[in-house]
Length: 444
Image (tube, rainbow, N blue to C red; front, top):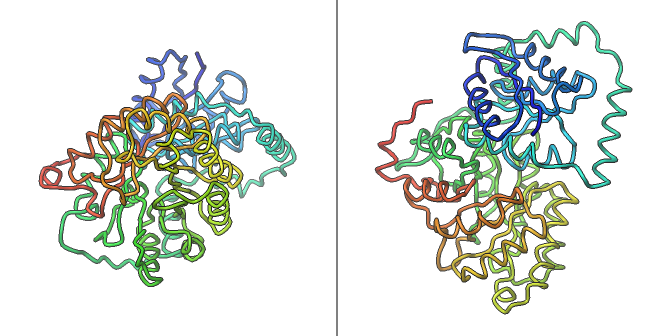
């Protein structure tokens, strides 16, 4: 049982109530620091209450929720003894604990749904900081905090900014770093024309969607941050990649996923934005050697990649050479840990038996990957709900996630994957929307 202090402003009130119930059901002792309604309040007051409860030892962990999670993190980190980390997905929650020994979690109610928030909190509470190199750096953070100069009264006045003030500042910054403001619409159902369907996926628990370069229209910001904008075509030209980068800057997508030769170009194009760069390794066959995959991953990370999707050596797995496959995966996951990048292991489920799927998930777990992913999209088949459930049963106890990719062509398909345990959905630019999804009405 963990003693947890939790607070929220008016925008985070409903999510706070949901999390309070979730935490109590888990057996934790919860101290609700307010607010107690959706009436407008100033989030810094509640963020400080939660932070002081953690700093004093009244609570072992803290959770604070506002519209975006950013302002509350800033406030909480002003309190000595608090290491607050904002999380918007499971990887950032895990990283905050594993790398930084964060003792207070901030969440943005406007960015994540209830199901995902509960998963984030669970990861935050169950992950420990055990690596000596991380513990040494946490000590440096503590030393830096104790040596920090006093904050002037003028600087302290920043805490008086309202949520609306911060939103205006963020909007202005986004305008400065990129985006033309021009809306271009194409025919056909997609995340642009059916954002409520995308939101429904998010509410169900998906924390990442995949969109191709032909994605149309203006993507609402709350949905865009869940989308990996992807171009992995072998005939992709620099102009095509540049278009994807421009779209990602305009919409503030979560990431741009490209082949390794384009990583530096993409990272340079995204500099100054919140959009991540993602690269594939050993793609799409997975038949290069572990040493080459390690070099490829490290080069991509040096060039600016923050996420790496590697393909396993399917032939070695099917031949029973698990030691080789573990070495293969470790070569990339170790490179990712060294470079603070997220690692995803593509196992190509269409080519494997159930026994082989379990074995490679166990190997990925031993290699401490962040994700297992079903497919490259280049094999004979894609994701199935049965595969997702099987993969999740193996990796979820270790805090890993599952990405469903390939063959997801309808709202029903996507919901089935999420219900089975997927936390990311890879699909075409239409994000698997058919008539049933177009007719779905979601109230936010």
